[in-house]
Length: 433
Image 1 (spheres, rainbow, N blue to C red):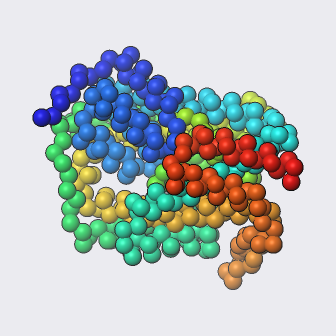
Image 2 (tube, rainbow, N blue to C red):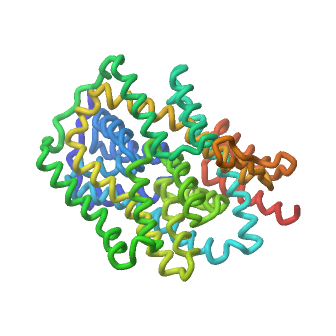
């Protein structure tokens, strides 16, 4: 016999539960999704199992941070638009405040020998995180020879041929759409009546109003400061990122590394790895690394400083998370139809397979930056250059720390915060090497 669902919560009860999730949401999207399931489905019984899985499947089809979108969807399902705003914001705000303070401290004092040594260990730990993500995504994504070929093509396209990230995602989606034509329609479980009846007029109104809020600070920066100001560039870049990145936070890193590091020069690859380490060890979504990148862009630009860094961090965060409200409030009432769509299922599977190759590219780039002390630029026949590690200059301590982090995470499932703390302390050994 199925246990009856509890009555819908008040806004105060929803805010309290959402704030708890935001403060305790360590461990990346998988941990946060599990935490929300425990709170909203198991403890509070506000949402049924089928509803929760339906919401998760829909959010995985969207670009951007799926865990924050799931929190927004849950709040919308329980208390409408107001509930969605409360749940979505409180999922992000605790971690965002912590990351902001830590980024400020990092920017101001990160070059001190002891602090640099701690981040040396964190950088090596990040390689372990990425390898763990590869294992998790591989188990879910690589279901046959076609998926393996698609993952390999995505890796080669980004790493060797240096194709634009959006093109790789677009090609994967096109392949998935073509493959879906020969696939059966996915089975779906019966669901309760949607919280809000699907309406094209209501969807357009929601998309227009929330889209206007999303673009308002970007337009203001462009009008007041011009298109070439760092604040405007940060807004434009992270708005594009919000639309183009499917497959989770590690997919975002591939585009970040390609644009923020290589194209714009807002920060270095080692600095971005430090930012990922900060985001890994704080509550909230892993894409808070975007806030770190925005802060460093403002901090390190000519004439920059704390106020410009803070504004750029806020712009990066807003343009990362505001689009989620557009996708949920405009699209959630139509989401059941997507679950029954062969095309949507095929596109999702193909992008998921490509994500494995994208994360592998991130692992290769970051691994070369962390595990070797030098690089060799190799010219390619089509005119560009490929940076490869100098195998004569391995960083043995970083390799040991990274291997230890990977084993602890993948084999023994050690808490991620403990892994980072242990690796940071191990990094102090670099002071004597």
